[in-house]
Length: 184
Image (cartoon, rainbow, N blue to C red; front, side, top):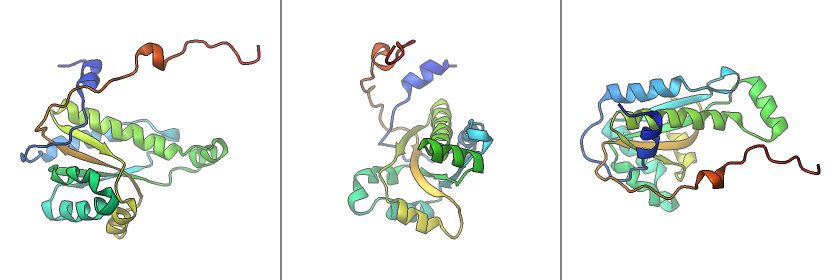
């Protein structure tokens, strides 16, 4: 079994998938990992819509990847597309967020989404987090059935490629310990 750092360093954004179907049990494990993610005031302001049935996945892909959004249409070839939706969230995080100029529901959804993606990697699945899609059309497609604002799509499947690691900042470039106080 891989350690967490081994899993995190091996995970890649996959853009080419095999035709093999993804077992529903593996998607359920990914959803369980997302469910367990922390959130502001334990509000859990997220919902995940799983498109693993071909006809629905095709409708979702048509809505999401048309026009200027076509560069991310590769995701339509994944056996599963997951829509990550942000819910309004609890009152206190919304109030605190408005005072601080932050949307905690989006931070919370990002944490839950990363839990999903890392569990997928542990299950041998490839994923790609997609922010470039037609959120308005996706919302319209889902509006009668599911509440929430579409924030991201997650393409899921067995990888048909092993993309190389992309450059990362060094620890020295991304961290600062105990900086001197400004003006002191």
